[in-house]
Image (cartoon, rainbow over all chains, first blue to last red; front, side, top):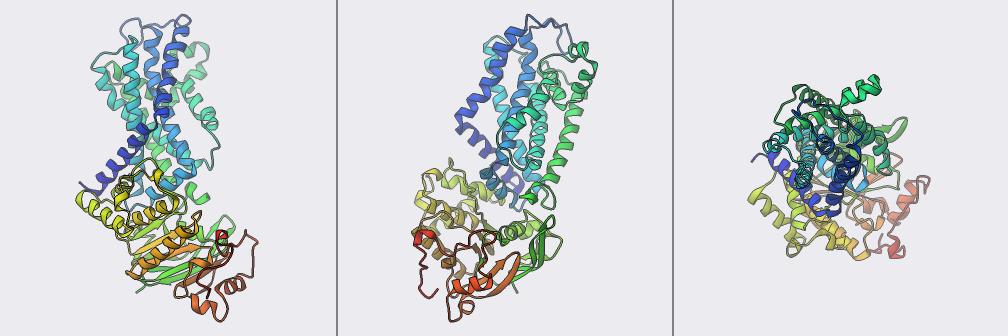
Length: 262
Length: 259
């Protein structure tokens, strides 16, 4: 095995091990989307009428509609949580350790992203399994098709988290990221309501939602769950990943970026 | 040929100069203490040496490899013990070490052999299965030193490694690292505690980003004590924070009376 793969494996295993060790984090990451699914969706289903839109071929309940959005939400929270932990001093210590490895920095950051993505995919599958127990299930093959979509969306959101961690000097708590990243990204997307619904109230808002990379991550996941490939969403997600990754590389470049500022 | 060479290095945060034309050349098998008050520029120098910062002013070479043009080759010859703890408390000693070995590209039997060797050297092999959380501060530090040696570097950098340790752990670690220098390793040890330095060590005195002196501790101290020499050089300055000359746990009396 080459040095690159040795490091990648170690970084992914470490992240997975740490996550499984923190049971409260695991629990919290599942409770959040389940509360949305069971409580929010139950209250909302009466208020919101959904027409048949792709990829759905029949009328669906609201619970079914928001499952892909909640998968995206799990990945979004996971990405922001890991970016937050990078900002903390203790993590800066272990980040230093990572950055002084003789392997290329881009590879190390990518490995870290892949590790975070792996952990978020683990959570998504547990969530999908619990949703299925509640009777909200997808076509069986959809559970396999969704894997590459989750990898792409996880990497994109993780890269966004890396950019944030490299640009924010100090974060006192989660509230800042919550207000300025998670909420706008989540609510201004197709996670909770389809974009045509949004257009009914405000065409401008709909246009903003259509630009939001999170919308495309959710759509990519939604289509994949029904064994369909949404090429436009995939391009948008991969394009956003490329931009965010480039930003992270600049942010963690020793000649510029955050580390310089102490 | 020097194994560690810093030539004419300057660095500034905006308009505030942190390092000003710093030149330090060191040979293998030495223990060199980087002595300076808080705010002298020690941390900036360490960030440059570990490639967390880069500067266009001046050159840094580790084991003959230029850090700017060949950072990966230079970093591969460098072992680092950071001031901040970098261990994963919930993982075992062995897992922490094998994680680091993997970051260096080492795996399999070679990595295991190296891990056993560094643990043996610190008499910690029997504790390799324990969680780091169960180790005391001194043992955690020892482990970090062991970890920094896994890939057999030529240069070992330590950034105030005894901060927060009790007197006996401090002595044990200081002695251990002095022994390492005798095996041919170059040790570069940043500190603001004079009592960690032996008379035979080299000392670089850094203050306000400038190298004020670089010579053997014995020569620097002259007829007086190293503390007096240090205070004289730095102008007794405390403008950038308190100058801690000895560990407060030791009632201010430095060990090895000659200092």
